[in-house]
Length: 378
Image 1 (cartoon, rainbow, N blue to C red):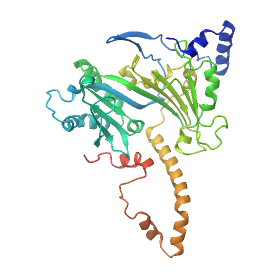
Image 2 (image 1 turned 90 degrees about the horizontal axis):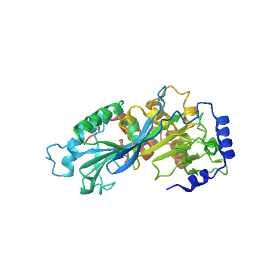
Image 3 (image 1 turned 60 degrees about the horizontal axis):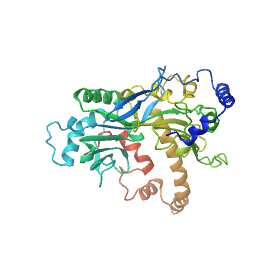
Image 4 (image 1 turned 135 degrees about the vertical axis):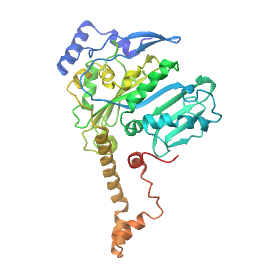
């Protein structure tokens, strides 16, 4: 069924279409056509027709997976059906999760998720790196593994290739592994991609897909041009779409009102498309093929911002914000202690009284413990 936006676009005159193409050509280099995209291929997946997500050959390495959900058969981890309880099955997955991602700490949730009977958090409630879900007749003997953005960031280097290799082995055996969600992101620390220019690019057709213009949305104080520096976000598509674009000011989202850091992120979902396993190892090819304007945006990029740089940049911003609010909240109290003659060591002791030395602020708990203690206890 054609969307309202699609009907409006179909009603454009030939002259309007020409003006739209001219505007896009004026805004972007000639590399913006259809993004060099291949024509979509439709295949039969079970009883459903689905589009195979397209890719375009591209030079360089400029993107990373920011969130991932995939499924495979429970038999891949319990081939002899020896597991009796949910804890037995979770134990049978430990080697896989440690070998591929380096994760060793899990916490059972009170209830399942995504229609599965049981679910275990990867990490803990303060530092959720993802989840493992399984069980339930409706899920037909599958297990779902989900990684958050923080989980992808802190997984052991090279996890994408290791996972790709193992899932291909599962495919050969007949376990039918599949990616059900894959978010691919590009971090532009210098801020050369401007969120504020996205509405103009949208109107010029830079985000059109399959000859259709998806719905767009905005978050943040666009009318006032973000006077408080909280950050702006531009969306193309909806959360129910098989492809959702988010362009946002990442540094400001973390709390630095002066940061130029922007992020371009495409969320691919499998409800009406096939997500090839190759997305794990060549995310750039799938990102650049997502929208016409991406060929111009990413044509000059040749290297990926290192995860260590992203971690460091995030930590610096969060620490700076926490230090600012700590000074406002407790600075006057520290002055009182100083006037009363307490030494700096005594003041620190008072502040840390009763605090577990392994505890960190919630916003830093996802950064510090995983870096310092990758092999956490069971």
